[in-house]
Image (cartoon, one colour):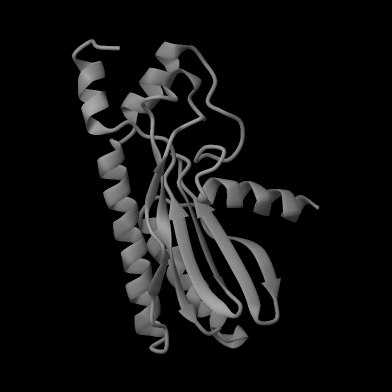
Length: 182
């Protein structure tokens, strides 16, 4: 049951529903929420970094497993941020799109694939992969970072990779708040 709850929460975070971060919403006053969002990279910086990581993961997995031919199955889309009540109109999160390749990474090779994901994602500040599914011919791991971004990597009938950002302010909004606007 606990695994189901974790998987359900991650599915919501990775699809842009319910905010980008796992766990409770960021509490505090408007000023505390503002300070937290201002301390984070802008949405443009965060999105570029996460897309770079996703690209590196695709490239390194395809190099290790030459049969992998990635195709995008869902494009990037933007969503609001329900995690910061005072900034629901200005905060933003993104689902970075989903990538898939037909075919399964065989069980004996799965640890190598997981190692690649762990190594690359750690370079971008993500936690070590957490296993949410581990059965014969069916594996899935997830990871997250301190801003609530997350990724999902798995293999069964297809091999899939997807991710999402946490809540960030667009640079124009950060500039406006820096100048004293509201």
